[in-house]
Length: 594
Ligand code: ADP
Image (cartoon, rainbow, N blue to C red; front, side, top):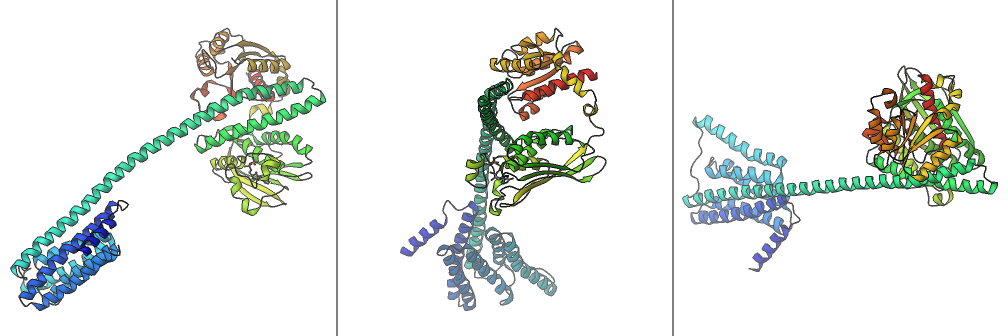
């Protein structure tokens, strides 16, 4: 009695909820199959002994012992595979001995046994073993039937070999085993199916929640960056204005510190927002023509003062120096990549060091050019074991870097992603205390002809004439208005003010303006809507007025906005007065080119 209780406990322990339904059905199929088969064979053995059929009882006793061992492996050891093999082999041995030793022929019970072997082998051991066991007992049966047909001229399935009672019992029990096996297997099949459906539903809702969370995070970052950029615009703008209003020497120093801090804060906001957008695959490369030589010279010029104060020799080597390269691509993103790498090179190079920017042509045909960019420095270098982690966001080569050089550890992560977006990769070669070289290849389409403005001899004369422009400012923020006025006053520009999109629209209708500096977020009517309505005005001369949006949203937000199509250009706040000047100069150039 104790043994039965212990076996039941062990059997229940095998069927824990942790087991997948298929596993549970395997264990049940084996346990039930073995018990029923052992009970059946034991009864047949007794019956055979009574009828003095010792050969049958011996043969079946071997099978019962094998099945007992199988049950032991299953219940005691939990080794269901071994148990299944023993169970199937003992069944196969009954069929094979029927055929070989006793030449009993094929009776109904043998066919039932072969069906049990086929089903049990597939259900418990899977498809490969299923095929092997199926063939192992089906083939001998088929061969036997073919031989008997050639000998007797017909196929016979002998109806009776066992004693009547044993035969009936075997038929019923075998059917019972077949039904139990299929029942258990399909029960587990449906259980798995329902579990899978349940899991899919949970996954679906988890995915939706994650997407919603990402959207909220992205919205939060966008609005946060917008809110932070607006006051920062005022701070940087005022610093710029104060700097040109002849400050005293001590004030100049204070202003420099203020500018440094404000610009660092801005870089941090921009990097964080950029990085988050990149993670959401929201950055799309813009394709417009630009002069690469000009861009490189501008970038170099922006780093020159810093390099000079630190005693660093900043060099530019390009193999297309004498033939300006006009390419089509994302100028802003290339600038961002180069700015990050050059700024690092200058930052991590000590006095009297060298920073070299080289761009060489790898391949060039009529339409396309592949350029190899290398930014090399003779700075502190990066230890071998840190060379992979520095591309991870927020990671720096060591903890002292922030203290000594500042930075957030986002720059390289952004650069790496931007280069990947160009379908290329960033390669680093660096040795500690010797220097570093970051290189990457970019492929660009060549512009069919050079851009007209660069060849225009009239450029310098036109630049001075922005003072003739009639500018309409559409802006609701008092500080921003004050800033814009101060900037425009420096260049003696003519301007008028409107406090929202509606007012701007009404003023544009008078036809008195050349260009609108349009804030996007305004009360009553926002800048996008005002621009849309301006474009729909019946007078073509008025509806085609130049509109330059001024916005604290990110470049990506603006470019991806549907309403971007109504704008001629945009400036993201905080922008430098120089940039505004360039945009206004472009308007003058276009007007004079008409
Ligand atoms: P940050 O410059 O803001 O720290 P980056 O992602 O641009 O972040 O750089 C990550 C780290 O990689 C830096 O902190 C520095 O340890 C290392 N690094 C990057 N460029 C250089 C370089 N040119 N020379 C030496 N170390 C560098």
